[in-house]
Image (cartoon, rainbow over all chains, first blue to last red; front, side):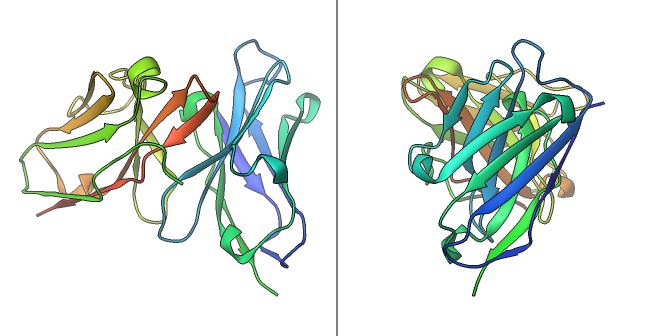
Length: 115
Length: 110
């Protein structure tokens, strides 16, 4: 059974850097074809895709946020980390991580950006 | 920012059939097909179908997807109260090498 769980701060201040961790089980990020992505959803708004990392360390980023995002993986810990720099109140959202092709999602973690 | 276009809302009666649409372009929906996700308030999205009409295990046959050109559709037959939710389409954009989402459709079951 594949599961994913997001963790990180619930509150960050404007201009700070957000670091979120996705801890997963039931699959390995060293298996060919496997990837883990991040998606966010501001309150009452639509889903927005952020980033994706593959088993071979290939990385993809949303063009509009690429300059602020970094995605990395720790295969031994079954974790994927997303960092987002220069946080702004408009980045307030629930952040989800998802397995390959979004077939399994974590429960999400809510991040509020406020001073 | 939504890369795919979905109608904001659809309303249908109980036991009726609803068809939701999702329009992209030849680099995403027209090329790779679309995935459909259902999201109930306060819950994470759940995958209903991928690459047009492949249903994950456990998804009801009342949900069926299709594609015509650059437009994908999700048809829900025999609407039930629990089908009331937000529905998102998503597709891999082969030109940008990123996933793109639609803005979501809120389905109301009357």
